[in-house]
Image (cartoon, rainbow, N blue to C red; front, side, top):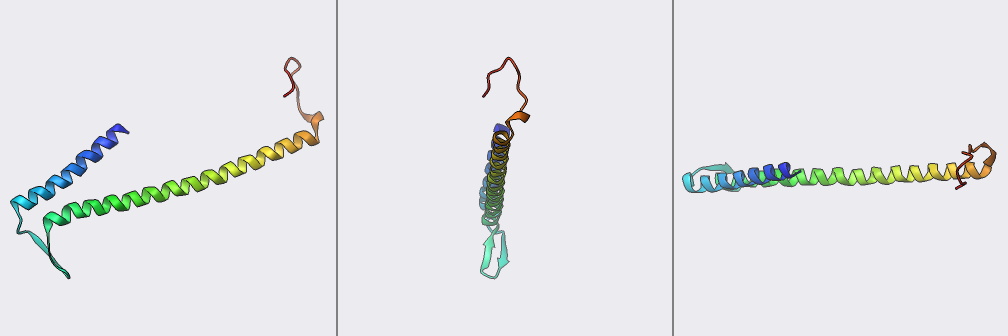
Length: 104
């Protein structure tokens, strides 16, 4: 996990450094848009941040779906445990016992 964090830090610093470099080296580079000219030194870090936001939302959605699946599985496990306990109470003669162990 530390490696992922370091890679994330270095890539983020690289995107910011590329924006700063474009600002000082080529401040005249701009792309036309319906809202006027957009400087390239804003677009590169902006695109990186937009990708980061979308990736974060995707990770959040996956995490929330995992929580829902975990709850459903825990509910199923609890239901199965209750069924086993009901069967134990219903048919105590069918439960195998180890002679040298206490009954629990």
